[in-house]
Length: 301
Image (cartoon, rainbow, N blue to C red; front, side, top):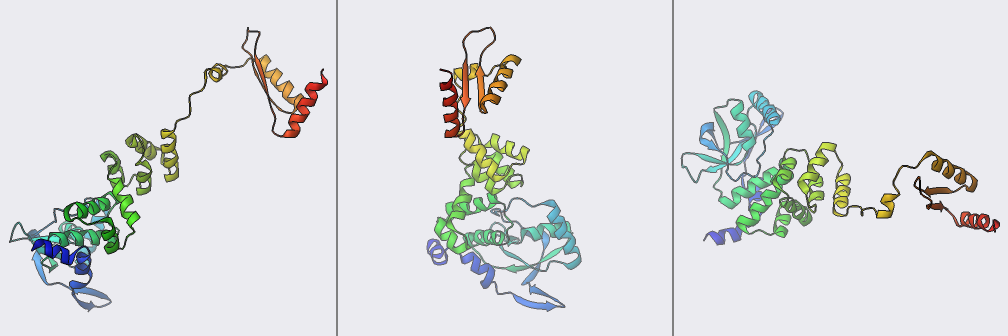
């Protein structure tokens, strides 16, 4: 019976429940519109949803909402259902942020809309509410999609269609869950954007590169380049080039300068002090310069 119910409703049932099936009565109070709640419930009888996809609640934003609630009250009722674990309580389906802020504002009861949702609908509504309001960070959003896939067998295509997101958006976010936890924590904290995190997915050591990106305030493009460089480091210099990296003496540099001025070309002399042998390199930039150099060398014959 349960499987038939899930097949009949499918993903998107939560959205219709949130946006249409609730059918709240709208009342006008002055210049504002308020949703008439089903009832008022003591705040101590309301408990959060243990599967709430949103895990981060910014203290500053909660305080701002609490200050507003002290003045205007809770305008938008919470959506709750009877708590399946305790018949004397109600579990939050949508509105945990308002519930937390109301506790800070020391309210004693809250307006609610009571709905008889099953587990899949509760999760869908919670995810949709947060996603539609852009309240989830990239990691929380990705974890929400993973919950729907793992717990209820939803596909990326099905979620994309129901949530109004592209399949590539969902796929890219799910890939973020493959990053090490310290890197995901940087995204949750807001130190790294989803773009930074995506660039680090293919890195061999994403944690080290992530901390470097945060410390230097790197752009997404700079992180992408850093990852490419780490994957393809410059080839080690040959022994011949390494030997040529010594400091040239003043006489050698003076001779280079004189020849470059006479030829009007770049001249590099490799000659170690105390040795007889060495090498001279003359660089030309055009074929005309090459012809000039050949003429100079031929004239000395």
